[in-house]
Length: 142
Image (cartoon, rainbow, N blue to C red):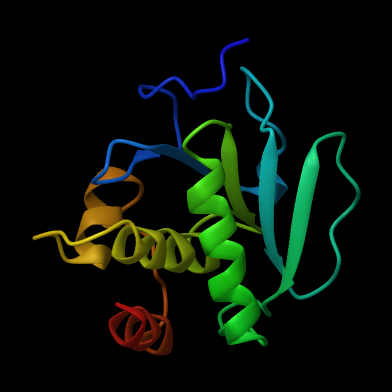
């Protein structure tokens, strides 16, 4: 069974280590192609159940995660699982919370010459990391 994303697919971010993680907006529906094996949902309210394994982290729109230690643990799990599974990170629109989490994942992925926010904006979406406090959060995370 293939457990990787198509690196050319929309929303798939290649981390500096080469691992692939898909970001998306839940409002956009499930994209074509394979389903994730594991998803990290960043929402203010619990999202609907999925047919794949998922973890919900409370994170109100335009703000920051309410449980920072839980957020870091969830990202560590996502990074670890991305070595052998299709991992997805998703919020409502797929830009602010998802982009912030992806930037933190870039920082967590290991030493890199890349600025995490610039990296995610260049390789995922120019709209990633929407608010000044999300930018500061990534800076303090890395």
